[in-house]
Length: 200
Image (cartoon, rainbow, N blue to C red; front, side, top):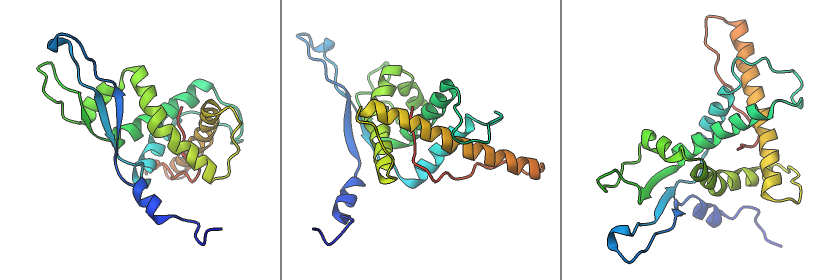
């Protein structure tokens, strides 16, 4: 049995940025038909990025009359919107650099929020990045919180992620609504959520 519960070296390694290949390089007989691989450099998800993403997810519920029961079933569409908002926020802050992404003249495009939003607008690309960057983080957080996942793997985890987003975003939205009712002169501020992060 190990004398330690936390491997500080492993956690240090986990803080290092890492590259992911979004699209493989295209080779062809003619040089002009060849295309480089599309790669992105991910920063590990930290607490600041996570808090901002939770706030983005909670914004989906603003203005909606939520039931007091946190376990009450809500429309799947709203849950998915909250999950998408959280995933998008994490990807926008998590992609530090890229390769193979440029303008019409073949110059590498700068990594800006505007360019990232265009890059993430393609559904298949968004889902692929979400699956390798956000979802594994969420599943690890669920395991840390002793959440029970069904043996169906990633799809089961994704379902539980939506439920967690449901509860977390609802608490933030309702907390903001209560504050705004008590003090109308002050804008509602989203509260921090203590449960695991989620994605759709």
